[in-house]
Length: 341
Ligand code: 5AD
Ligand code: FES
Image (cartoon, rainbow, N blue to C red; front, side, top):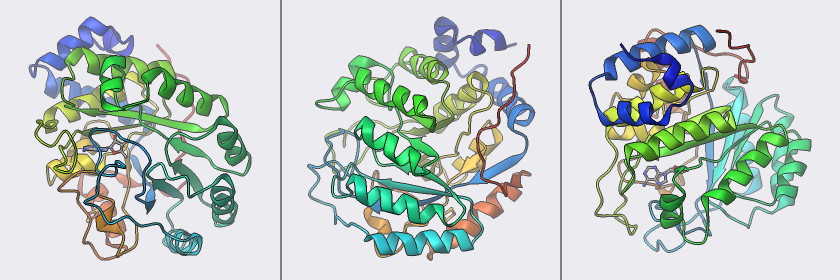
């Protein structure tokens, strides 16, 4: 029997042990599903994502959008194109719009402010996922009505973080995430699984960090080597390790909103369904319009690139029902309940 208390208390030795053996996987998945049902119920929330720019000023070794990658058609959506998409999403009845991009300074404080102001008129929650910005900007956008901010911590190993992110540090990323929390954003962190050199202990640190932050949202996906990056020849993360991290994250932060990620769906055709069965309670249909969508190429094999326009909405709804869960109809804010025991 696994020791649930030790997981909840992020006992690093114990988590490292669980992440080093596959002996307890089925039990971890089962407990995660129970925790999910108890704390967040059977609803799965839809978050429509618009990947509005693939320009990026950063140099993350794993990512296809990195500034050095010349094998990518770069695009920026105009404000009107973004708003048109947002209106379509609202019409489809989806209550969260995620604005995601590379770190692209073209979208100034004012431009993002304008988008927030206009999109808030549509009665939806707004999630920003545009990377590290000035603390002052986070504040302005929060006051204008942005609800959530996604910024994965990527890895909580300071050494690995520094290797993967030239010129940046885990300390700095942490400061940004705590500032977002302090400003009242529902704050999303998360990591990749199977990064080059990442150990089970490093992944235990990821879980401890998610708890320390009290992450409102937790995105976990496998690392998928991208041929257009310096990590082209490295191995990637496995399905079972990623599912195990999703399940452990659910046990560690029981009320967090946890997506079954696109990367999980990209390494296995049933990856997202499996994610939903072992702790995940969110899914993010891709609503990036064509012809841009295939160019938001973080890693090879990304799913949904050539689906027709709004097809992912119907597809994800069917997927939720297919695993016996319920399509959420509200905004899908984090549940605020006291964790007893
Ligand atoms: N494999 C898997 N995930 C990746 N990301 C970026 N590049 C890759 C890759 N090669 C993830 C990062 C980032 C998110 C938008 O995509 O975790 O935060
Ligand atoms: Fe995009 Fe299924 S979610 S095709």
